[in-house]
Length: 298
Image (cartoon, rainbow, N blue to C red; front, top):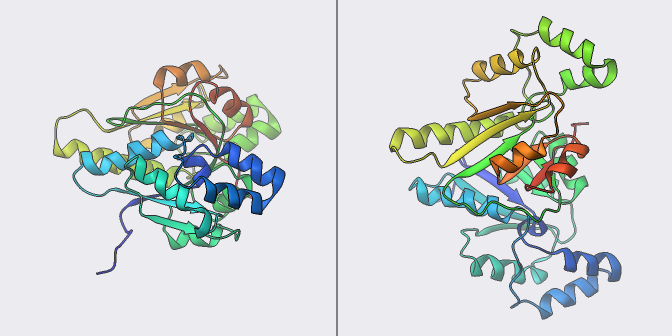
């Protein structure tokens, strides 16, 4: 019987996002493909260290155990060839990760295979691959190097920015082009009109569904907790609250920062991953929590 990915949250993860391949990437960039190939083959039995997205992926896979049913599938998406991938699979096996599927394109673009695998979230260090995924309507983000991580598998914590991430970039464009006063006037006028969906709206709805199903089964602490950390403040808060209400979604923790740096709040929340669209926010946040930037759809 064919295996169906329908109704599953499918995570597409690059090998460099899952494991620490910075040394190998430097070999590839400095010495070329053949040197990289020989290095990987010579080190097939050397287990790779966890990468930036490793704790998030492991915690998401643990949901399948906590819920006693399969809710999450992970697919390794790599431009490596099968010849150089054995080290990746050996490392996956070493850490006991339930990952059995991969797309190994041998240098060809990954983008055609994202929809083929029904990817709901794509994480990579490659800005081009992430941009193409976003332009194709897939939630995708480019990771930042980070030394911090949340190793807790019993409760996944994910934090989101609002505009251009959960919501469309309509309001943010007004702020960028016309300034704060015009932005606040626009948000007051549109307060009861829900914001259009952004690239991560579907992912948030999927996570909310997982939360609801978990809550209906037992009285244990929820396996998933979400936070909205937005630069908005009053009076622009109302439209956000009404939008989430219209989507029938309750975010566990909401922070209207009003221009205050987000890093301290994020450090207190300790997410497995924080998603934002602004490089300045991501660079600062990545010093304290794993962070990924969501590019604007072209």
